[in-house]
Length: 133
Image (cartoon, rainbow, N blue to C red; front, side, top):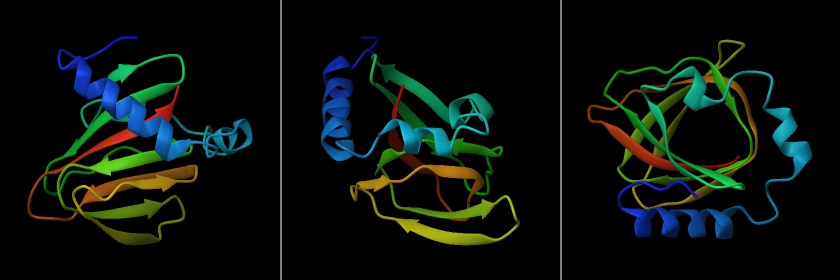
């Protein structure tokens, strides 16, 4: 396993990911969101892989106020916000929805097809995302 200098913390994040995503990351659900690049490929300035093993990637995500990422998709995943965040998620058809994440409120998500995320808040948004490798 490749780890960040604070390896114990990353191992805890990976353990949390395993608990949060048990039975949610089947091959069929992963295939649904693979038509576009993964977030860390499309927007490496926002999405940084900070640890991984043969099962999971741990991704640190940071949007500055007003920052938008590039269109991408996600397989089923778990998200752990480190800060409160106000985000706008644009679908490929041009529609959007706003999401307000609370720091510490973990969420497990189904695969997410092509979208763009914008930080519509007045402060930075930071979260940890757990995705299958």
